[in-house]
Image (cartoon, rainbow, N blue to C red; front, side, top):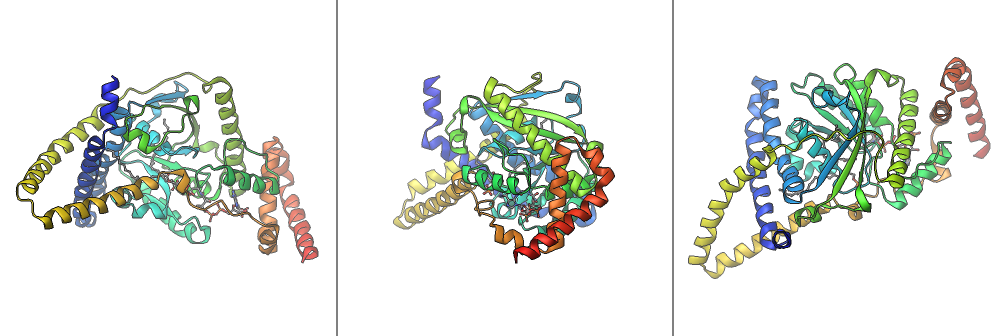
Amino acid sequence: MALLQQLKSQFVCQMIIWYVFLVSGLIINLLQICTLPLWLVSKQLARRINIRLGYCISSQMVAALEWWSGTECTLYTDPKSYPLYGNENAIVVLNHSHEIDFLCGWTFCDRFGVLGSSKVLAKKELSYVPVIGWMWYFLEIVFCKRKWEEDRKTVAQSLQNLRDYPENYWFLLFCEGTRFTPKKHQISMQVAESKGLPKLKYHLLPRTKGFWITVQNLRGTVAAVYDSTLNFRDNEAPNLLGILNGRKYHADLYVRRIPLELIPEDEAECAAWLHKLYQEKDSFQEHYTQTGRFPGPIVSPPQRPWALINWLFWACLLLYPLGLLLAQLISTASIMTILASVALCSAVSVGVRWMIGQTEIDRSSSYGNKEVSSKQQLKTPDLLRAASLHRYLYASCVNTHLAGLVQQVQPCFKAQCSLNLMLYSRSSR
Ligand SMILES: CC/C=C\C/C=C\C/C=C\C/C=C\C/C=C\C/C=C\CCC(=O)SCCNC(=O)CCNC(=O)[C@H](O)C(C)(C)COP(=O)(O)OP(=O)(O)OC[C@H]1O[C@@H](n2cnc3c(N)ncnc32)[C@H](O)[C@@H]1OP(=O)(O)O
Ligand SMILES: CCCCCCCC/C=C\CCCCCCCC(=O)OC[C@@H](O)COP(=O)(O)O
């Protein structure tokens, strides 16, 4: 066992995994380009082909997690909801604190048969990542710049395109918008305080616009929101390099199925609903910290062999030509070919390091890192600020179960907020 573990961390094993992933990925990206003319003839057929091509790439990472590192993924959920998973379209809301959270998400997608078709609201920067980012373009992944003024149109349009998607999919939303760091947490809690919202211990304050626009544009085609909370046992801090080194982690995922009809249509009410959801998620994390488990029964889906079979197929296909190439290089070794090979390998390893960097929290973006000064808050036009204040006062009321009452007095409450705020803004200029 220890020998096998040692073998997994050997450089040559890592090289083989990377070689298979990169070369097969680029071949699949090329095949995806070849499907472009088909989009004009039969869009649905092109989509179905791309789902399968996409599976060939993403399932390799699932294979690394499940079969190489042996990571255990446990699902806590209501057994009544379980049969619906994979058999309907859903919006998945997931916390964003771990470097491999997306990969655990992919594992569950694979187990429920929606890995090739799964979607995410992803930051635009990820579309430039070779293999994965390029694959996403063909899978109609929704990209955002995290600048609402630019995103509101493009994101809505991309979501509308998914309305006639031919296979079941899960649409993943990291509503926190960025990965958890202590600094981002501190700043987002300042924002929460300024908006009169309760503080969260384990989450950043969720950004509500992406959730609202997703629910609004997918209503009628998506059946439910899967509120998902992920954690790792024994304070493990898993990362991609650990997985590639064959290190085993223990992921626990708690999923609640919430029918889409229960989510308010109005933007302010929807935002308040999401804030309340994150307060509940925070309490589940607290429960996990105290007891080492999530509430409810464990109903884990079985592991499937397809990810491993796919990897073995590509390995067989690509390792033989690599062997031939190496043999030829050694037998006809000239100084030029050796130098060229070393230069190529160095360039590839820099690229690989950059790709791994995309998953590392230490290299996380500065989004959510900047203090929001009170001056900046006052720059917002009066009416916008008034609407925003109203929204969050409303959110607090929903959280204290006063929603019904507020709804009745809403018009008068809104006007009062606007007036108060205008007076406040003018007096502070
Ligand atoms: C059964 C099993 C179930 C489940 C299995 C689990 C999962 C599997 C499912 C699917 C898998 C599929 C794919 C996964 C594969 C890979 C995924 C990998 C990665 C991609 C992830 C990302 O890229 S995350 C980053 C991009 N995504 C998002 O940002 C989404 C959330 N963001 C939003 O919704 C934003 O609103 C926005 C992006 C739409 C717009 O952002 P913008 O910043 O422009 O506007 P905001 O309105 O958000 O911000 C302004 C308001 O925010 C206030 N503010 C200011 N500072 C802060 C702060 N620090 N924190 C919080 N709020 C802040 C500010 O005051 C403004 O307030 P207003 O009152 O004006 O609203
Ligand atoms: C056989 C397996 C081979 C394994 C090789 C795998 C190589 C994969 C390399 C790169 C994968 C790129 C996919 C990256 C997905 C990263 C998800 C992520 O977490 O994005 C962060 C984003 O939410 C928020 O960003 P910030 O926190 O604001 O910054």
